[in-house]
Image (cartoon, rainbow over all chains, first blue to last red; front, side, top):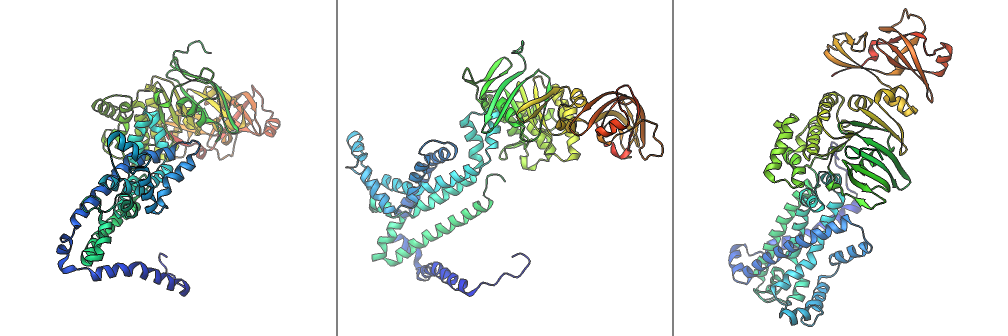
Length: 267
Length: 358
């Protein structure tokens, strides 16, 4: 396209493309038009918005942290080792990407609920009950969001130049030292992008959370759930909450775009 | 096995990778630079990888400084990170996220030395290699020659017992290559262990290596000093590769006084001082009478001492001032009745004598 006039778009392509743009952008404009700009602060403070926002922020952050601690090692195992059943394992751990979240919530409830096969043990051995607690929120969000991180990191590991790891080994670095001092720093842009994606997905999580953790204000009612319930009796507050999530999403998108543009492993 | 396994490197091993198999037996003594030559796919990298521990041997063994590194029959395999080796990769592989100092301190750190001690060891190596100004740079900000030296410093900083160099100068442009080569030679002379140098470049092999091993198709086809290999190349590949006449001398503008005797007229590049003159065997003309009315600026009389028949040429070993290797066709040998003891005239054009500063 550089240097020449941009090519004209054929009408059969232009019309559907414009419809698509309208479809994606108009609802957001609707949100902005209806926003109670004059008394935004009041609309937000008048509900449980602050509570929900704080809960959402910390649970999304906690599930991102957990995903980093256990998801990055899993990505390494998937990218750098070979064993029978590996393809099946990769399919299983990335299943939550395509699974309806509400099904994930049901599955978590059946496994970890008081009568579930793990939940029963937790209850009888430690007196622990997970469903309908903030811990359940974190678990539901992690279940849905971690695969995003795993896929991003695994892809980066596969495309990373293993020559550097080989060089580190000839310099006397043991495998874990190689991972810590060479592999991880070199894929850090991808880990960062994966973590942001994971965090955004956790923040927006609705189906698995409401199924497994319920919607107790201050305990398990996250922002998306709060928006859903507030819309019935206080539309202005719901719109204000939605605006907050929209702003967060835009910030995430901008930060991701920056990382992806600079992306890759070697500057 | 060789009597003295305590010092040096001993390899007697086979490595199979798919349809390719490498079968070699070689030794490298301390302070010896072993040049490994061979066409692409000959198994040079596989051999280097096996010695480094990146590729396990299929049979046989590798012993370094009296310690068994790999023994397929006994089931011994020392992992790469426990082998006392320094590896300079063709593409250097400097860690892009670390500074020059951190790169060089990497090996001491990984081998269990404290952070401060590792840093000061790195600083020592960097100043020894003349890189003291670059300590805080990232590899991306280095020139090719600088990156090569940092890679060498990084390999040496782990105080290895064996140095492996995989085409260490091939990524450099021709201009910097000779400077870096001269410096590399200096550092290799100071290294107390054996060194294996893989190269494609005959000049590099002749200047840097004490002994050459030529690999073709996973087998050693020739072994000897650079002079021996050049005089009687075992295969045509070797002949083409190492048949370079290399003369040391002192340049003074358009003339070079050769250390081996005689003088060359060269294309004047304003060079003065110690130089190397390289002459291809195929660019020397041989005649049975004193050449007259020729454009060749350098003619000298010499005596044939040997002939070696190769696939498509005959390599003639000629003694004179200076001595030379000359390649001619088998037909020319017959026509001019070239045979040992015969006196001939050699001629070479001034433009066929590339000169390098030493």
